[in-house]
Length: 373
Picture: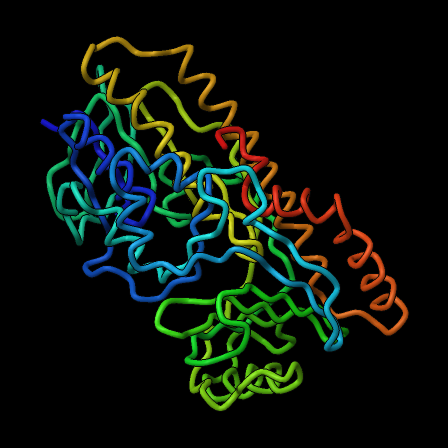
């Protein structure tokens, strides 16, 4: 029988499985999807995560193919407002490591048990001295410890309806990864009257573009691509390489708690933040990296580290609330504004990006406010 059952084999669940297996814990990893997902929003790994994963060798694997983004530049109406320098932070890894999520998942999966795919979990409930995980088309599993890391869709397995307040935003975005683009290994945020356009470098000479979008999210693929091309042309970026674009909306949710006995909830199941700012996946990865040694001790000794787990839960909840607040600020700053309000926003950003404000912003956006940084 597995000592720990993990529901969800995305980046967060996979990392936890690998970290537990590395410590000698018997793990069962369940995943509803029959194949790994190709789509992705998350591309940046921040310094606290790289530091937390260095001992396992995961950081070395991540950096082998990642672009190291040392600075970001804010622009408006074709002019620079200021620069955020990650390379001037006193960190072990003073940059953001950018790579597609498929590459991240491959690096995280080394040492993890193979995921049992097509495992549709229907219920997670206490049973005797452990937790029972019910499956749609197979016998139930039981384990002393169960961790749900199945994304927002798995939230209903552990929280009652309405138990987690979810705040949807009206904002919509278009996204595409394209070849070419300017600025090499610099992240660029254009904040114009028509809304934000973010640009991040990726390996292989590609860039990720994300643009605020005014049209319905269910518009046709051709219409989405054309709107993203128009946003790129407006900022002087090469637009012809965009042949398709995905649309997404953003929400905010932070659960009131992360554990009940041997049942734990981490990653997007417990907290959703806007991907504008790039902290959502990192938040979940730190959940997993900091929980793994505590669960391994529990499995090895049979003694629940209650006080340490309480401290872990407080730190992770506080970190989630901070990340959600920062993501909300990022989202609001990227909305379209009228001429007067946009001019005021531009002036405020220029002032905020002067020293020492730029350093404080670099610290915040590199997850320096996380309680486990």
